[in-house]
Length: 326
Image 1 (tube, rainbow, N blue to C red):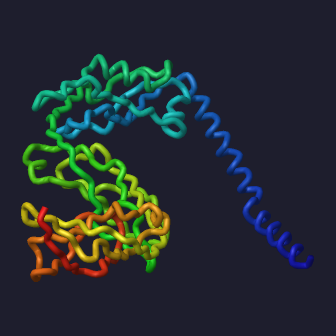
Image 2: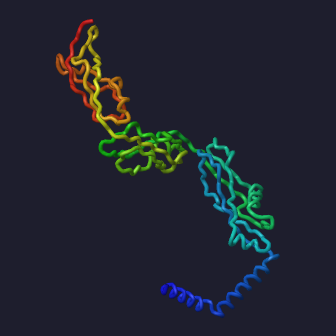
């Protein structure tokens, strides 16, 4: 309670020092001066230069502007009364939007001209009816452009994805979209074969990740899309063991080739969500007669296997064989 009373006394003391009789009289006359100035301004006309921002829209992707276009139009206006204050303090001129829609983007070089007639109408729309436009500059905007070549390139991730221990990718990493349109001169495009995603910068993953990343835009070219969505499917890993038949290949004409044993054990690591999806028919284990190491022995090779399995082993790695006449 004592502390509160002390604060109140302190505040009263500050008020008594700042708001003396002289201070109040000064503020009173200052407000009167502002009021009379505003009243004097009513009914008078004031000239004011306003910079109207310009935005260029609807530029086709295969078009590149060669020259520097003005970022604003300088407009000299005459306003009545306090409207000049509104432009100086409160309101700003709206952005003037100039469209490139309908330009001929099939020619190698071209120009788009925004003339006096089109600009005067658009500029006038930025102001109220009590505003008279005296002058504006520039009166003509000329855009010089060239038509770019283009081609479709695949998108790739250039850094590796690290997984936590006992985790595995369940499928291919998906990039959406998988390709992008690239626009540039023939010389700029000739050596480009792929577009890369910016570094992922991810910690070791223990679950599926869905992220967005920017594309790395090569110097001198433009991309139809700058961002992609990436899905990295991750699941806990487990081991699976199945029996797979051995297929014989390249044995002499007029003979049958048989392997002993006729099937082998295949062990591999797979995501738990895909455990029941991986079957013996997804593997091709081959005994190739041309690769025999002895009169009766041939090593086994894996011709086909499912995607995203790891640590694949065959037991045994070599089989015996026999040839029988048909």
